[in-house]
Each structure stands twice: as C-alpha cells, then as structure tokens.
Amino acid sequence: MINNERLSGILLHPTSLPSPYGIGDLGDEAYAFIDFLARAGQHLWQVLPLTHTGFGDSPYQSFSAFAGQPLLIDPRHLIRLGLIGGWELTDCPIADPSHVDYGQVIPWKEKVLALAYSRFPQKRHEIPGMDQSFQEFCESNRYWLDDYALFMACKKLHHGADWLHWPDEYRCPTLEFKAGLFKSMHEDIEYYRFIQFLFFDEWKRIKKYANDHDIRIIGDIPIFVSMDSADVWANQHLFQLDSKGYPTRVAGVPPDYFSATGQLWGNPLYNWEAHEAEHFSWWISRIRAQLRNLDILRVDHFRGFEAFWSIPYGEPTAVNGEWIKAPGHALFSAVRDAFEGDLPIIAEDLGIITPEVEALRDEFGFPGMKVLQFAFDSLDEGSYLPHRYTSPVCVCYTGTHDNDTTRSWYQTLRPECRDKVRSYTHCSNDTHFPLDLIGTALASVAAYAIFPLQDVLCVGAEGRMNTPGIGAGNWSWRYQQSALKDELADELRGMTILYGRY
Image 1 (tube, rainbow, N blue to C red):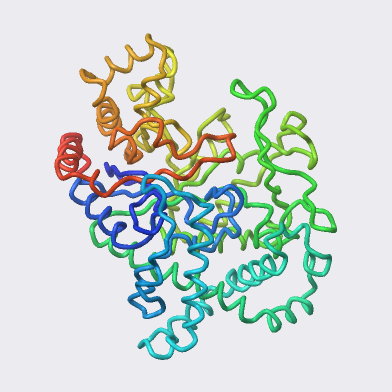
Image 2 (cartoon, rainbow, N blue to C red; image 1 turned 90 degrees about the vertical axis):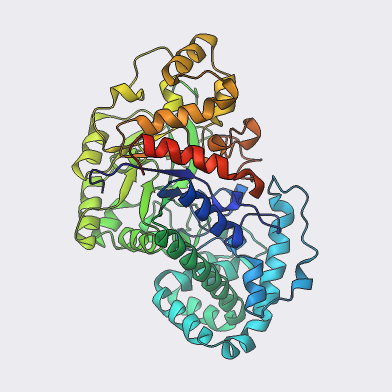
C-alpha cells in the first residue's frame, strides 16, 4: 500500500462539518473543507464509517455495513433536483451550530426526505437521466440494497423495534415470505432505495472532487456489525446465532488495566466456518463496496482477525470469555486474490497486540497505527515514541476519534509527563501545543501522518468526538466555517513542506 510516500491529512467525520441544517452534510461546506485541505498541503481525509447509524448514533453501530448515512444528504441538493422547495426547510430545529442534537435532527431530516420521495415518482422522469441512474444504482447494488431496504421497511412496520422482537415469520423469514413482503411493502422499500441513491450520488461527487484535488479518502470498516442490522438479519447462517436468531456468543475485550470487567460490546460473532465455506464472499463484497467509495480502508480492531474474545450471550460483563482463533490468513488471502494485488488497508493495531497479530499484519503489508498521546502518558521508552519507530510502514496520529483532544489531554497530563512532551515537541507556548504535536507527527518517519481537525484548531475537551464506554453525548461536535482561516492553512502547509510531505 505504501510505496515510499510521505503524506499527511486530517481526521474529520462529515457530521462535524458546518451546515445550516443541524448536522454536517455533503453540501457546500464539504467542498470547502476539501479546498482547505488542498490549501494546507494535505493529501488525506480520514472519515469514520459513513453508514446508516442505529443505537446511540454511533457510526460503529449501523443498520447496514453497506448503506450510507441518510443524515448526510444535503437538503440543498434536493432543492436543485426540484424535490424540495427552499421554504420547506425553514423549520429546521437548529439549536447550536457547534453541536448535533440527534433527537431533533433525525425526525426533521426524515420528514424532509419523505417529502422529497413523495415527488420522486414524477421528477425521476422529468430530470434528464435520473430514472436511468436510479435503476442502474438499484441493479448494481441489489446484492445488499434489497435486504437493507426490506429490513428498514420491516423496522418501520414494527415501530423501530430490534428485529429479535419481531414476530417469528418476520424474524426468520422464508424465501416465500420475503417475496411476499417485497410486493406488499413496495412503497416503503422503494423509499429506502431512493435515499441510498441520493446518498451515494452525493458521495460520488465528493470523492471525485477530493481525488481531483489530489486528496485520498480513508474510511473505517468496523470488524463487527450491529446485531440489529440487515447484515445479521438477512445472513443469519454467517453468525453465531441460535435457531430463533438470538446470538450464542458475543464480542468484547477481556479485563485489562483500564477495566476490571473488560468491555462487553455485544456484537454477534461470526460463524467463520460458514464464511470459509462460501470463500469469504460476504467479506469480499463488503470490502469491494467500501473501496468503490473510498481510497483506503482502516480496519478497526484488527487483532480480532487473528483471535477474538468470545463471551457467552447473557453474561453481564466480559470477564467470562475466551480467546478463539480467527482465520485471518485465509480471509485476507482470499481478499487479496479477489483484488489481484496489494490491499489499501491500514490495520488498527492498538491495545495489547501479540506477536501473532503483528505477523498477520506484516504478512499482508498492512501499516499499523502509532498514537502520539499514548507515547507520553508515562515516562517509559514506549514504542509509540517517534524515535522508536522501526519502519515507515505505519501511520502516526496525534490522537483518534476515541481520544480526548490533544489540548485537553495535555492539560490533564501529570506534570512530569507534560514536561517530557513539551521538551520533545520543543513547545514554548501551551496554547500552540496541539500544533507542536502535529509537527512531531509530520516529522516522524511514518509514511502517513494524520491528526483530528480538533487538534488543528486547538480545541479543548468540548471537541471530543467519542468517549469509549459512555453511551450518550458522543459523535456530536461540529466546527464553524470561520475557523478554517487562510493563515492556519498556510502554517499547516509550511510544516508539511518542511517535513517532506507536500
């Protein structure tokens, strides 16, 4: 994947973009952000998963591993298509332009999209090429789109309930019953196809604009999928479930220094034997779909492809689990064969990593991650310190979406650790420190250096994107367009040129 390149870029989820409609979207401000990246000499834009979120608004818990996030659809594009009048957007519940209020934004956006869909049957024939484009989209994505649209229509019928609480015939439908549902629920199914058509049409334009400006997009692919998802519902044989669809084993991580009871994620575990019997076709389809929309994939919880923590369903904590080997070698060999070459994958190899995990990562040439915040949490000579990097085949981050912002993290460091990181980064002004740490990432031998926009803007704790283990209040930070100043772009560009990443 990395061929003697030295590139850098910014981590920002599109929900954090400015927008007059309560949440970041794929409208004008997304293009303005790409323009800022170009002015600042950056060649990478890392996003979190772009999928249709479910519980807790987390992009790592989605209704589908394939479907796009309807909340990112730009209402102004609906105006240009003639599906919405500008006056119909004046009731948007904007409470705070620096914060996403999902409780208000979701019902409002759903109302707007439903109104747009009510006019689509006529407009699709009036707008040149739209009807054909919609039909081609539905046909080329049928392998996931039909199950997703039917799943969402069934969720609507059952008032949003988890599919495990649906009646038996819906929970484990026969092919005959599903065929009947496609007929009886045609309108609702067509609506969900429509919003996916809108999302991917807008995203395709964004990606082309970025690529035309020599910017590659890095996206996340979580290792596990949500229990309440079309993926599990429609492919129950690929997961460790009982005859009624309930999981028998679930995912998490064991107890460690940070948690005496571990982390109980609750995602259903894969039935890897079934995946191997089907030559990993579901995984290949998933990765192929992502790489149509992205340039590089960051695979979350990579260690789970070597061995995963398996917890009996119903356990109150993650304590009573066990490590089970995973067929990572067979999986990535099959994926590599399907793509006929090197895979543009970054391995999220944070946490307690074994030599076996490192061997799997290195066998396929996947760069791992180095997080600078982890380098200075103690006075030890740890492997995250840049002078300890043994290879450029890695990605250096100041922090990730799961970390506190660099400014807030720095303020809460023990005095002796703060003194060390100040000396290491040659920091002379605490308010400028996040940019000094960015300079350290840029100066490292890592092929790629990436930093959250919060660190570029020197934002404090209010800018934290996610606090692991906390179910509410995450994924809501937004920046203001006025923050992307030309002088900030110039400073970032200068550092990027200085350290050979331009």
